[in-house]
Length: 217
Image (cartoon, rainbow, N blue to C red; front, side, top):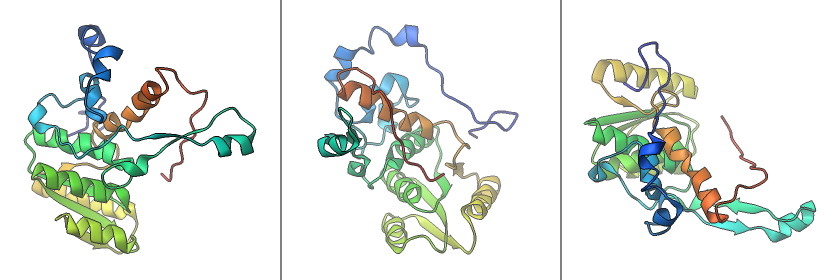
């Protein structure tokens, strides 16, 4: 569904010349304070399919004491914990679920060990879609409670996240679930890229000298 005929990930492409007159710094400045302010370079065209829970436009905090300790001029912290379910995963799953809704999907599925499962459950609930979230049994209890509270079909598996991915793939093949797994669709990265747009805009349309990005996968 989200892969090429060769089984490789697809990527969204935009006609930048076509949108150059409407997608300007001035036009963006007047828009809603969420990631949808960059809608010309996001893959969901039907506004009715754009699920909005207040994601994006997270604060940029001037960590001046940290900068002083490090002996550098300035350190900024992008507080992604302000997203609806508390992590940057909301950006990607917001776009992926919105696009799934636009394409007519009724059920979405994702293997997860934490925040992605919560985000998928939240956006699927907001979209009125059935979510299947497959997680390892050692997933933190707070995450399990959140996913369940959001109405998702939560499946616990005694194995690794890669094993959870196999369960999702089986569901995709047998039941036609929309696969939200990493690199199985081109939309999550489209949501995550808005962090870069926000950094640039919040810094007065200047890019930082360096970006430090913690990751676990």
